[in-house]
Length: 261
Ligand code: IPE
Ligand code: IPE
Ligand code: MG
Image 1 (cartoon, protein in one colour):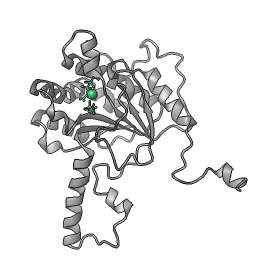
Image 2 (cartoon, helix red, strand yellow):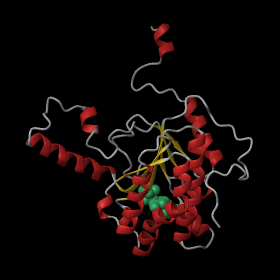
Image 3 (cartoon, helix red, strand yellow):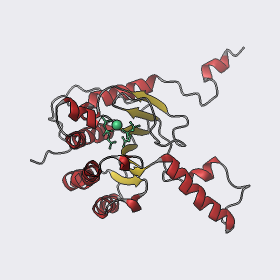
Image 4 (tube, helix red, strand yellow):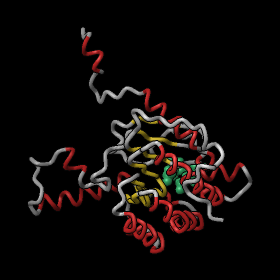
């Protein structure tokens, strides 16, 4: 049965209060805990990954409602190739499964799909499904939904360095010109604002090679909730927590400047 993507009649959709002030523009999520969710139920790990798709649907919907501008989802890391082949194969089939059901709804809700990571080494069916979605949603100007697929931050930085060195070599970039902003343009996230909020589900408190450069001043929010159980309510919780944070970027707050001593 096809479940409509933006269905306000879902249980819990009523009475939800969405933060409307100081909403993070860019939310990045490490969607962790699928395997443990399945194990707890005596199911194979891949059942957890499949269940994780329904959470993706819920959270994209919540991000649209909360007027988040960019949502980046860590979907498959460069280190996840270490897993058994059958699990890797299942995970890499999920983008196609997800998009074959939900792309029309994403399009009608003005979502623009993007990807970061090394797409070249992904199976053709994964690459084609994601590229098709990117092409079909190119002109949309609502939520930007980024899938980090075969993404690893160290790999991304190294790849950027190689192109940068070639550009310096052929005179397209000079050492004098090179600053943080210029360097950012060599990363997969070129053109995107750095994440304001990072959410990691599943209880671990680490970055697992995710957006190391881009998370320099991001606010972190961790939860023990496993990804398949993560809900719109928790997402809104994270946004509320973000709203309370004072971001100083190494400086001091304006009100402290007034009574400075
Ligand atoms: C996250 O869930 C999904 C991917 C890494 C693709 P896990 O598969 O890592 O789940 P746990 O951490 O083993 O429970
Ligand atoms: C991070 O989760 C990668 C994704 C969620 C895609 P992992 O489960 O791979 O991270 P580690 O191995 O626990 O650090
Ligand atoms: Mg994990």
